[in-house]
Length: 324
Image 1 (cartoon, rainbow, N blue to C red):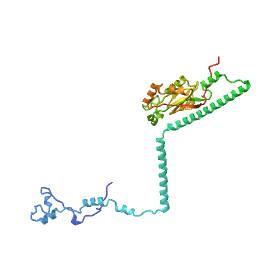
Image 2: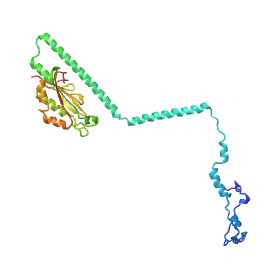
Image 3: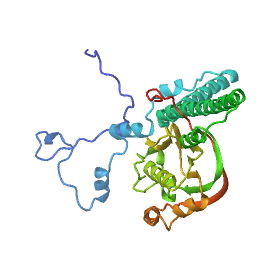
């Protein structure tokens, strides 16, 4: 688009500040100069007048406007008129913004908490609860079975007038199918302090936890075997009776007695000759075993007891073996 006329100058330059055109003496238009001779060195006033810097020309005014007046005056005038807002709309807007900020902050905190939580923890807690419920049911059913057996024995005595033979009573006691009471010993041992302070739930529990030896299922099996070989008639670990069908094994990060998980400290109760058992299971008779325990920071303690009561063990159904 071609302009028909040149736009007028926004800020006209006064006549006294008109730009001064200078030409060198060798210029083509030097003849049009008012004077082309050198000034006298003695005429200082003339020299100052000629060399005085122009401080109010177009370029300096443009720079001054850009630095000191960057906003167009008409635009500044347009901003002088503001819409008047009521107090109700002002506070309503603030309340809405505050509610939105609170909602966004709460949702963000929930999101961060969800990211930091372990989804497997809830699953583990559910499984633990189910396992505890099943163990409670097993204990309740075991008590019911023992009660029914007692009722059957009592009814059999009333009908036949005979009592059980000593062999049958001995077999039931050895198999752990009946509760027993008598003197014996109690052996207590626990994992070393360094192992108890570490996170055992994440360990593989194969005898060490973070390179620290702990009590294993093999240790409990060995101690139970030694007690039986030294005359123990009934044994329980942490209240769980050892019967003919009871196993001592490792599963995950825990030791299982049958289907019940136990943890440190481990209490082994054995009914028998308390003096003989205390001597045979003492440090003097099992020096090498106690030395290996001491190296790992495990210190078994044996105490005598005049009366120990052990409940019956959980017995399963015999499906394949038949009486000959």
